[in-house]
Image: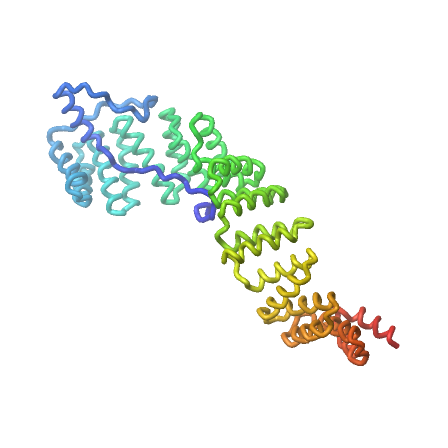
Length: 427
């Protein structure tokens, strides 16, 4: 599922806090009217909603019960009691739509406080079905229900309710639009999520990092690497010290076969001190290995990682350092590093490379001994070790040992042809 992926984002979860119930709002309005207050009314969240509903009124017979319900939830911190009263109101055939909607809304909040999310969802659905709340409370409930659907892995339902919310309210609220995009993402409907995110960006609101991260993830899922790179470049420009973004950008550049840009991105991370794990340095020096003539850069990156204690002097790191040193013709470093690596390698492969470098430098005694040590560890291609021994014995003018080593090399497929040819020349 998309929700389990390691992505660069998290869908923003809008707070579904139950700030004020309709009963609270009605009582506050009544109090303001009695006191002739001139305070400005709070700004409407859904000013363009055209849904028509009768003004909600609490009947005298249920007034006390509803107030007790509100007190139990907000003042007494007794969600179980609030839910119990709410259930009684919902079961009361004489309760009107407004009273039942209020009861369901309170019960949803109480169930949430009790960590009973399934019940909270059911109560919110009931509040909407009763259709008795004013537009602000009705659509706020719809919003909270949509977000809860997302967090509970019910993306299709979230898409349905959030689409309805936006359609009925004509809202351009970026948070609501982003929630819908997140629901499409969770449902693995990536093209639809991209369309919604483009709609979000078209609102003119300042793009938030989480919007762009979600867009990057959608582009990545749909293999639109160029588009992902363009968005990541915006994000990195704003937050250049965000390590995850920088490495994500480098990965996208590699998908686009833009290795130079990938190296530049990782070098920027290196210059900012963002390389805090061994794999960070490993990614950078691996890129340099794949670039022509960059062995000295490999050495510099590895040495920095070793110096900072981020890289360890383990077998993979030493092998990489020795190989880079060899191809940059720093034979002293190559020999010293392969020698150290050979002591760590139980299979003899590093030891064989050590022997080859020694042989190339005409250090025959050392090369012969290193090759024999590799053989003793069971190196995968023993013929190559015997060829090193043969060359060493030849350099030492030990012809019987030279012939014997070639005869051993001829027994192995990797060196049979070469050794046999050299033996024939001896005859």
